[in-house]
Length: 65
Image 1: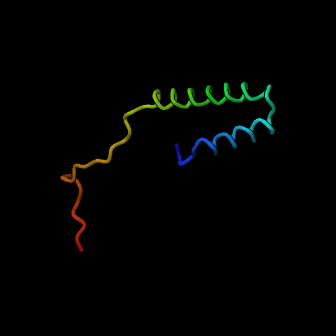
Image 2: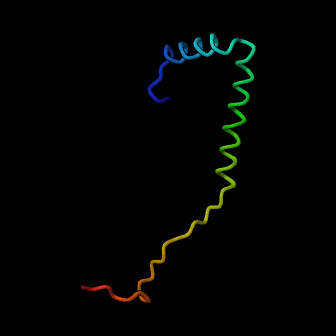
Image 3: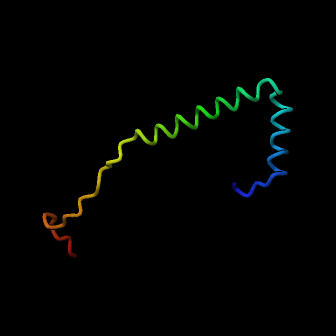
């Protein structure tokens, strides 16, 4: 998990608890979860066909010289 161990995660949680307070943390977690779900849904709903480069070189003029 990005090189973060248990001690680092506990320190981050304690800092978040001090900054936001105990009542606000569940709301922040819920908002973060909704944002991640929305992002994943947006990626799934995105069109999968993109413009592909024309690989047919038979109609292109030679550019020598």
